[in-house]
Image 1 (tube, rainbow, N blue to C red):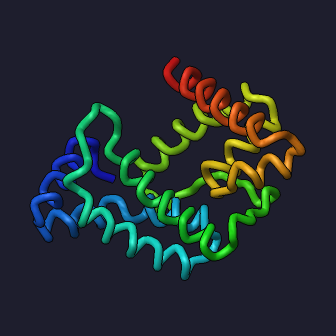
Image 2 (image 1 turned 90 degrees about the horizontal axis):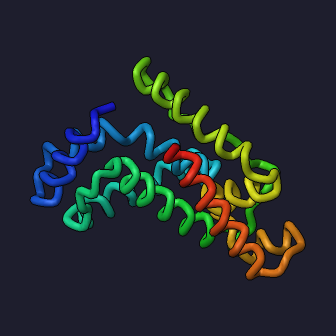
Length: 180
């Protein structure tokens, strides 16, 4: 995968309508974004359709990306995740099987990407282990599987506002852990 500055440069060129940059951006990021779509949708055909929508959105919205010092992959993954969740909610009316929660993987990563992914996965797993099990499951279901707050509140048998508090506090804890 390309490094941060290369991806930022490609996004900047895409915002100007550069088709070659768009093709290079696709080549550099499509594996990861497909994995995000597949993780949320659990259907290869749905993930492929959504990935096409993701790149259409990137083509039209690249000018909205702002270099903030954060990884540009974060922006791209957010676009992919949000579109996949939108499709999932439209198809399933927000019903997600909370027992199918697993790890995010990238198909056929190279050695460098594998090493980076393993390192990041360890960091994230360590941070998730610091959360109570029910909070960690709720965060995974909400932000990886697209479960609605109400679905989670019903599943964990807590009031809706309690679920919102769980998720907000859990995200704060994860952010603090990952910044150490």
